[in-house]
Length: 154
Image (tube, rainbow, N blue to C red; front, top):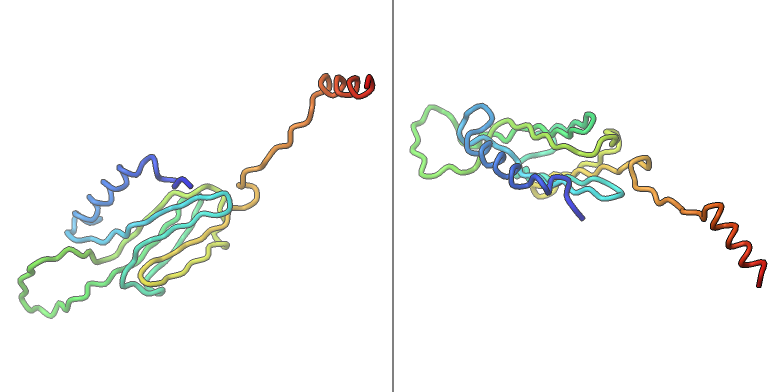
């Protein structure tokens, strides 16, 4: 099973790392969830890490061949004006939008979405028109005539 983005994986990893480092608007510590896209003959599955988020924190949209997940990973520390000296801050917070290319022609009404233990799973069935079709090969006229002659001479 090959993922849709496999040939571009190093570029996506670099882009995600840069986004994590600088955030979407130059903010340090922006949140960009990691995602996997797996395409089979039957369906497209997207698995996205969204720890700490609830169903109400997420919005999903499919338009043409772009699947977009938006959300907000709220900053968990009070901002009551108290001065703080951070020892280490690695986790990202804030609003995010993650767009992933999926095969064209998927039905947005057919998306099944679930959220369990910090992983958002989106499962989108591929319509019959997008599934691979096996073509039956028949013998050509000349070959068919030879088969008849061979059958008649026995």
